[in-house]
Picture 1 (cartoon, helix red, strand yellow):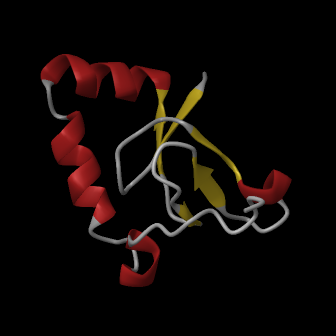
Picture 2: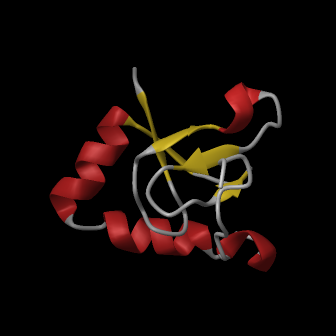
Amino acid sequence: MKRILICPVCKSNEIELDVGGYTGKYYCKNCGYVGSFIIELSEGEYEELLKTGELEKYIEEKAKDVPKEEKKPEKYPYENP
């Protein structure tokens, strides 16, 4: 079953591995978050939470575990100026 990755900061599912997975962190294309903490759901869990309207609440509850230094996305460090 497909896994859905969700950003704990902006709740986007536009997540990819940072530096090709070399660092063990993820990068959010939407807000620029870089960190190892993400929300991971199965496709079924994701659809069920969407259907019941509980997705936002679920993500906010899980996002409480994000270290404060990772919550504030900065400019993506690997982009050229």
